[in-house]
Length: 303
Ligand code: CP
Ligand code: NVA
Image (cartoon, rainbow, N blue to C red; front, side, top):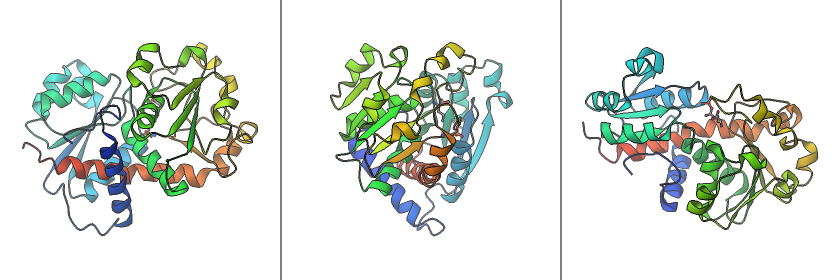
């Protein structure tokens, strides 16, 4: 694996290997046998806000022996309009890898292409692969496996989180039921490309949640959509609350990638009742991303 750009382009074996590596790195935290990023500098270009992703990558790079270099969009010429392909060709001659959070998926793919250094998607409008790896690790820790489980996603059916979940369901074969307003469901061309009969889409949150082992949600308005009040107004019936969870399997867990807007996509009561799982999920970002970094370092950076 040279880059981690999406869940879509991963194989099922790569997904399971990364999760196994994350389990090992979690168990060995503070006592790692090797420092695969020793002598390396990893740039972190972020054009959107972040708490979990930024902190977990900075800590993760350091714990594997490397140096993280955080570059906010406004601190570098990218913010003044320097093209991503030029930024990539400069950084590719100076640093050993790059972690990018931005809007367009194409920018991350162009960076990987033009820099020729290992590149990680730390969230785009299309995918959030690092988060899904942490989420799958959490499901495995809490429920033993995702195999044979029903996973529900209640909320925006076509944002970065749901897209990555849908690709994960396709690769790993678990049942995924997405409940979302019609306007925010995956379009026909995406579903055709996905071609995953185990992924169902409904407008009915009760139908998706019924007997689900995992109930997953995310913000109604993703970063960059904050002013879309018309969009938000369509989600009133898609709140994860106690009434909805009464329909889930008896031993269910609740996931939220965070940050959460209490009283919108999830109630305060549900978030606090499931906070052990949700903050374990947040911690798992560190372990999952160390697994990604370790795997990319093994692909021998070109400089
Ligand atoms: N879940 C997640 O990516 O959080 P941040 O936006 O805080 O990085
Ligand atoms: N869908 C959310 C995820 C945040 C981690 C967003 O893009 O803002």
